[in-house]
Amino acid sequence: MVVCGDDGLAHRLAAELRGVYREQVTLVVPPSGRGVSRPAVGRARAASAALLDRVSAAVSRSGTGDPGGGEPDGGRELEAAEPTDEVLTRAGVDRAAALALVYDDDETNIRAALAARRLNPRLRLVLRLYNRRLGRHIEELLDQSAALATGDARDAGLDGAGTSTTVLSDADTAAPALAATALVGTSKVVETDGLLLRAVERQPPRPGEVADPGLCTLALLSATSNDPAGADGSEGSGDQAPQLLPDAAAVEAATGRGTVVLEQVSYSGPPLPAARAGVPPFGELFSRRLRWSLAGLGACVVALAVALMVVTGDHPLHATYVTLLDLFAINEPAHNEDTGRQVLQLLSGFVGLLLLPVLLAAVLEALGTFRSATALRKPPRGLGGHVVLLGLGKIGTRVLTRLREMDIPVVCVEADPEARGMATARRLRVPVVLGDVTQEGVLEAAKIHRAHSLLALTSVDTTNLEAVLYARSVRSRLRVVLRLYDDDFATAVYRTLRAAHPGALTRSRSVTHLSAPAFAGAMMGRQILGAIPVERRVLLFAA
Image (cartoon, rainbow, N blue to C red; front, side, top):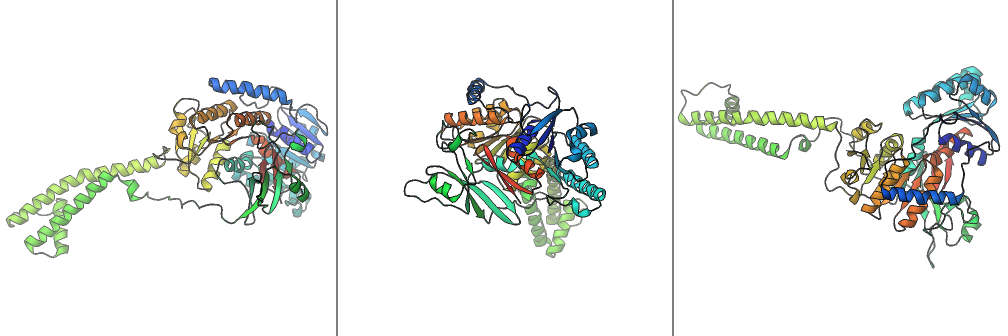
């Protein structure tokens, strides 16, 4: 196996292939100091700095290292600035079984994939691309190229034995787990062929109770999962660590431990209302005052038509027609008519003068409504029970889409008006608060005091940590989910926050930790259905 990348996903993927699948792996990374580095510091308050000191001490005591660093067993490591033809040849792509291209830049991955397919037409390719539409076209192009090069179109299928190209996105892989963690009663969901399965975390049954076994038991939680100070999910906990896919005897013997069971569900929530691409509703198009003004003028026209019918004895339709002519000042002056007819004509002209500013106001309000429909919405008054989403980058945009597919109310906070997900927020008509989340008043504008949960998904770890600490000071039992880049840092933050707030639900998630198993499974030729986190480990669903 060959893995090429420039961030933590490459190291995590190589460790997954070595540790889980026992594969020989060649890791190609940029030279030291030239890789993509995540910002490690940010503008933090005093509380954030104090917690960082506690986290650093916890990491030092745990003594855990990077599983992908150094010169590990079962593979080698090459340093190269870019995956050129020469670099791919040195890595052994021409005789490799699979190649993963997980650079952060889509263009780099596509260029390297084209070169690798030329060097080895039977190579299994796994690409990291954010653009879904482009990814589908690239899959078809590379598979067709392999079929022509090998002379057998059947080799280009996704059957594991032949050539295949799989395009994955770390954002798409991690988004379901991040979104599910923030919701009440919603667990990790895997869907395939119309069958919807859900993994549910169950607490240990009380004395005299019998726990629902579900369809099957996927995992036993760590023995310290109910202890706020315990090392929940630690890989080095031995028998205390979480156990994936236990047999019936292990489940029966594991008294006092929580479980993750599989359930089948037939309904995933209410569907989203149909998108209105046309004219907004009348109530949104015009203000209430303007609607009352239009109704009053309409009543005046009806009254004038009835009065003209009484005075002249004319037919109702003809009387209405004459009244409208007088209203728009296009009728002949009533010089030779009786006094009543002349008075009604003057009143109709006066009503016509009143009608002009009302019509102008209606046009201006309609234009303003259409203009504001494409602008960012503000959180409505009285909003509560919603999810506050921080950051509209790659991960935040995918999570936002996932939440709206489940019809969950969301308020976004973003500092960059030109962020990637701003167009998605406008299209989905999601309220957005523009501002730096580390500044006072920004989270308050997002109604954090009435929110149900907080998803901190910015690209800066300390910004996410600072936002969570401040939100917890506003609402101590708020459900929070952090996106943290480093997995060891995520583990230490989770333990510290859980010890400080044992009554609240806290989850820290590393995107590379969530997405690496899916990439590794694709390199083994499996069709990935979903990845479900179990504490600090991941359970992979594949066809």
